[in-house]
Image (cartoon, rainbow, N blue to C red):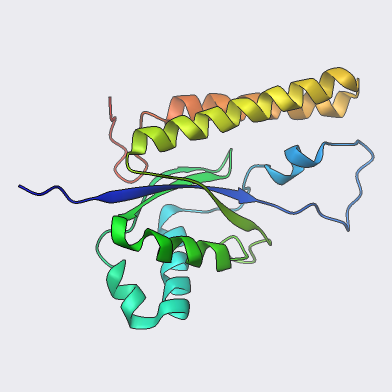
Length: 182
């Protein structure tokens, strides 16, 4: 029996700093870039936007290649991170479509960058990388807060820590089915 080979893409949504609103509190750039997605982004809306971009770039061939096997396995709005599953032969096509997307796929979505962080053969390794990145973000925010004693930075640190708690608690649940993987 032959096993179907799949790839899991861990993707971060990165938001560029907003130059029009200058806040009085100095928040580190890496925290601004990795802010939570506040829009009502759903896995279905995300898949629809990805398929539209694949159709735009690769036409009917691309749509047919990704038709039956593209799915969102994990979506965290708190960390702006998601994991996609696709066939091994077509993950580069999916990666290029994500690179060309420039807005959050919601009504009046704000500009963003979809950055593929890791491509893995198992979902476990992709989840471990997502947790590692969230912890790294918290450590960097703590270091920044300890060097500068601004109240706004410590509040932002609490937000980042709550994001990590959501990632740790949500890593055992499949977003598409709501079933526990453990």
